[in-house]
Image (cartoon, rainbow, N blue to C red; front, top):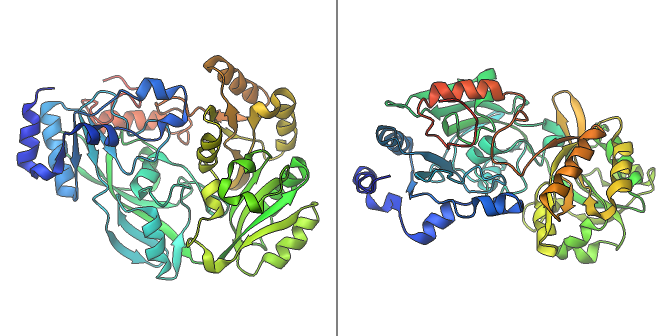
Length: 442
């Protein structure tokens, strides 16, 4: 790409909106792809040629219009907390940072309209001031942006009650296309599936409307068990118990809890644990319920400290992987879906085959009308062939796997990949939006 475009972008938006120094190129061209020992060597040298900082929709429009005219690739970025290289520019060009679009437009009864760069931790605080809360958020919510979560995530804390992003949790999105004259599309209904978990390949989100729910006071607790089987039976039963409202339900086998250094004094060596967020006032019922499954409540964080100190959710979902990596740098992970009926048998087969080479933790969640045991197993990585042998074993016993060691969108995107490919061709006819992340013929 010729250097003239940099001067012209600076003239369009102002010099402060364009970053060209080496440190900025390195910082803004990366996300958390290094969780994967397979992606890390493939992506570590990929860099944008320039970083553009947008703070409003007009600037997004200007950048897309200019980049289209010059055939410059554009990769959109929020906070860069994704794990699959979603925000890594495979073909250079521009990384368009939209974290400057960070305003709440409107808070209504059961919804919030917000710009895509708003950090989810800030948004949670703002809506709780109005007596509401986010239905769900990722474990990275202190840093993650709402647009990045919708474009690269799927579920998180709250999914035990409210499901995934596809479960009517996104009501509307404002999307810009990559054309000679970019369109500002207002997307609602089933059409939203072309833009949820799209890696910014089918259009760039600038504003979204998401559902809220009435806020609750949440108490956090750790329930300890002598056996992994008992912890999973408890988690399954609690997931289906509607008398104890929940925001988090995460069973973990030992030695995963040993990786959580800040919690060391609250964790008994050798104990399998379940991390919970339940509505304040439910602790007596929860204690009795746990006892039925040979569990005991071993640590409690009172509701008054919720989101004011390091919380249990900071050790769940893919933050579990982060803590594990700090303890054992060779650990990696996969994303798996266990059978709601046969998860105990599947767990036992995996442990019999791999022992501590594969460490299991689960996230009970809703998906559509079902309650399912999702999982992000930790793998003590040796080589790529062995990793894919483990994946094939999971699949052979009926455990579905979404491979986090590739940067391309696959059919796991809520089964909507074919429609997304068609929308990519329609909205991005030159294939300039985050090229290489979705397979289409241009």
